[in-house]
Length: 260
Image 1 (cartoon, rainbow, N blue to C red):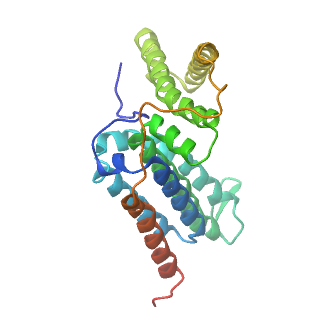
Image 2 (cartoon, rainbow, N blue to C red):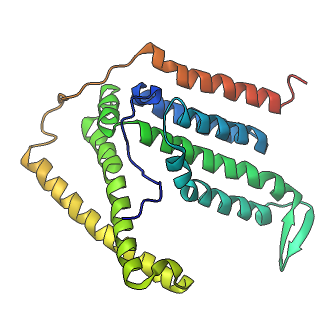
Image 3 (cartoon, one colour):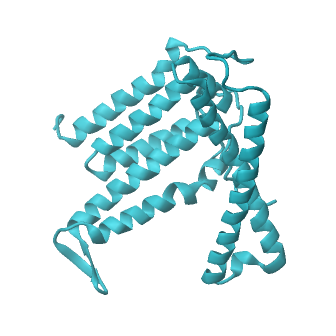
């Protein structure tokens, strides 16, 4: 199977980010998202992207090959959203492409929305890459979430890499038979329909098998449950969200011209 560097799953690297309490990392992602929706210009979003990239590569010890291997997913939707705002936002016309016009407001707001979406996706990937799904489930349950709901989060994170591997396996099989990577756009669309159908059917099979296994073990009958591996919150783990709050506040103040 071809390895394009994109692996949407946790891997223990004994890094600083791996050791942070899972719920703290989830709060960190929320803080990053809130800050991005407050920024009014592209520069703070670009700074946030570079900082998260540094955080992933150094404290997270995530290989750059893995980070850039996910670039299509990180930047793809962000680029589409940016292009949409180029043409959709009202304002003074800069130049025209056919019957569509690009406005000055669109040129300013497009990059803002690009960084809003792309940076949130990158931060979410960093959390997934550095967080054991079992630890996240345990931390959510200890925070008061019903353990059945926490187990749903665990299953979602557990099935994501499985679905990815299934798509890659189907793509490789089609590529061997008919060079799918070099086919026409219409043929590729039909191939993606087959990919999604295969993933959907296999997902339903896995969901049914998991439901039967949970029923056989009487999952959900007891009001509480114990965990083989426990996770413990450390006050030192708060450095990540606190540093993010400080940096986001500074970026907002600089953007508003407070220090000028």
